[in-house]
Image (cartoon, rainbow, N blue to C red; front, side):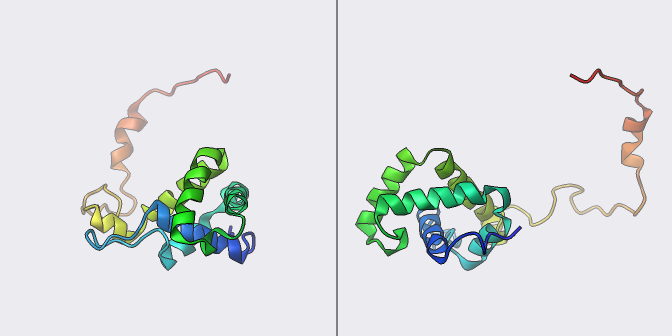
Length: 149
């Protein structure tokens, strides 16, 4: 579900600005900030059920700023961000989680952490299609029936 139509342009600008504050770009580690266009696009396309809380967080941020957060100067932006962090509650926590979730699944960030861009199993070994022998120990176990709560 895309959040493009559910966040206003001002909210998207504020999201990009606060994301850059949460995770700034690093030349030392050669990683983008969370305000990178690819990461922002990922955030907007995967927001889904978190859209309402993120929109509420961005509205709260704009209320604290008295104007769109992205339009503030750097010193005022830092002061408002500190106030937002202490008063934002669950909405602020959701906003931070969404930003970090999308940031840490970006290929460039994964490479900088020394992680491979594929599932860790089977570590390069190719399994023939239809070979379900890995499940033999599970199939050999007796079935377990449990009472539903």
